[in-house]
Image (tube, rainbow, N blue to C red; front, side, top):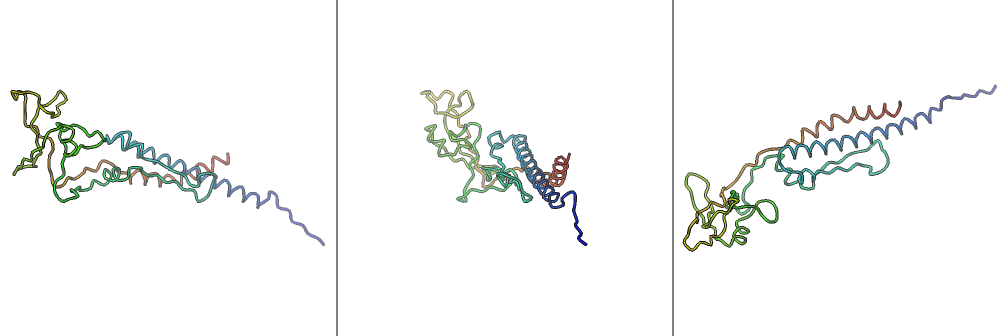
Length: 209
């Protein structure tokens, strides 16, 4: 007697199809989670008033870069990690050389290189010397003798009579400063992580129907 067993549908083919569906679902879920986290971090940064340029430093990359895998992953990072990290943790900042941190006041203006202007750059640009003023009851100052222009910035006085000449505070000197925490990146990262199982199921079911 000869017996023959035929299995319909083909179990091997069904398993292969299920694995392929899983690869598609996991890969799609990680791409959605990564893109969502990038968007959430960028929204946080602009919402904190830190600017679009810093927000655009947030990038993401999917792995594998092409194709699909059950081990798919997403990496989200910043191209300006020091700046973003500082606003995320709110660190205590001290001068590197152990002296003072010079905080520019409105009369100092802005740096031509972007960011905060330094006392050295200010003196080179304005052609004025800064003078140290010690204060016992508050932060010390760097001041300059000149006049204030229409933008409220200290510039060299051209008056021979001294008209309009003022002693303008240019920098505030402090031994250290506590940067306020303006971001909570972990919050969005945890939300993205918690969303992954649901995204996988949703994408898996979508492939069935």
